[in-house]
Length: 253
Image (cartoon, rainbow, N blue to C red; front, side, top):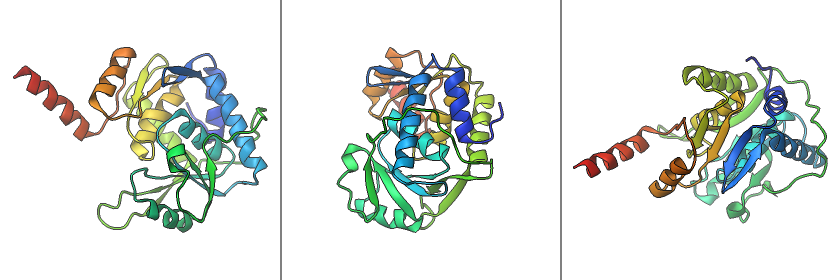
């Protein structure tokens, strides 16, 4: 399914799969229709606060439906999202935000005291206007996100991802992994990593399927989520699989 940009993808998927559950989080479900209402309200909040196409907005928050909804709201009005690693020393963020020219940063509660010269906005901010978004002209080559690399071979570098980049990888994921509307994805990886953003959020989103958001990386919490939900897709990093296999092997011995 070809989409021109994330705004078009968001509007069409939330309409096409309106009654499907998009997020399961902390014992509550949110449908695609409910997500669309929130995204529209958040997009109107951004517009009311003076943000316009091309503005850069940081996103520093733990995994939650709100993280995903703000990412879609930011990109749907043509702004550029900057997902930030939640595990960095607090003094690093100001330099990163200023480097990309961010006009603001959205923060979850645990980061609201962040020392930064950039405008801080709570992740819970929203507008009462839930009318449909009227996005600006966005093409597949329009920038959608700036991501900092991990910096394992030097200082972190900024990589630009366009609307087309993000949508292409999401649709390729769904094809290779044979995602369907009936699948249930367990999302445990931090969304500021592009692999997690694509495989645990956007790939399920473009198929109209359900995402179980599990913010804890503790073994018992993951096992509980697997037991309580009919998970069919579980993206993870090699180190996590090694821990699983080592645990199984240890019990077999």
